[in-house]
Image 1 (cartoon, rainbow, N blue to C red):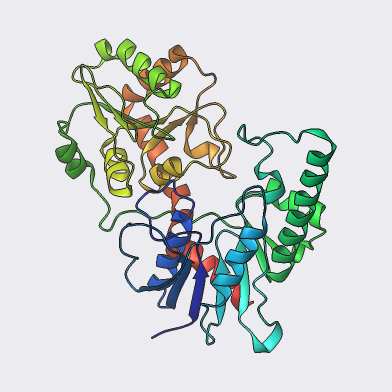
Image 2: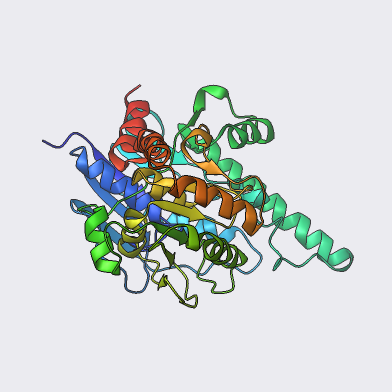
Length: 378
């Protein structure tokens, strides 16, 4: 029986790429559907892509190009999404929250509005090398105006939501301090991470890739489709060093069009099915390139209960360090030592995989949806 009418606003159409910005929103929508809710996702139109998750209806609207150097495009997207929400919606979820309020009625005459915040928009472009520094007085004035508009639009969006969810305490503190938000409206919540249905098995995954069931297997997942990723090169070098110690050992490089080699197989596709298959086949999954925030591939491996090795500078959700093995440095020698230790210690791998399983349960879409629903019922 339907429990709630839930409208979710996503930044794009259904996607097969777990690294895409819209992936967490669609995973969350699937979680609501599994709870028995009547779910509709409102999103800008896009090209191609897979069908929506079972039980999830969709409403697309014409995509509005974001104004170059302006945040007003986000406000226009919010307005367009607002026009497609159901009048009967009891719960509206924005994932992620972007600048610009929806303008929903408050109180008993409107739905409860919740939002998942992935980053402060004011900080989003600070480290972007493509963002040019303003030139001259006029350029600095234009930049100041733009940031003033962005601050206002972001503040309006934050203040409109009844409850705001963040993945870590640092962002919670930043939002509270910068925008003066009360702690009662800020909560921690992990992102929803989808697995294929049915989830791939170890044996089935090895059959699909062409790896014998009993051979040691290391899988390295690229954070982006970059065949020149230095992390993949370090993993290749580390594997070459340890392979003489482990008869029949194989390395799979997944998610990038890298070069294959002796006992090295490449799975270049970045869709969920291909990445989840590569991870499920692994004795050890390596994520050699550090990312500022939680890497979707690491979260996918945690949900898949696979022993994970991550870069020294990888951003992880709170509490994840005990569920992964973090490298001490960034050289191939350090990685080779860790891989040799784990491949030689099946019991240690099983223990690490068990911790990954226990920790990864928090990213299950229905569990994340239940956390959102609990706040809406409070």
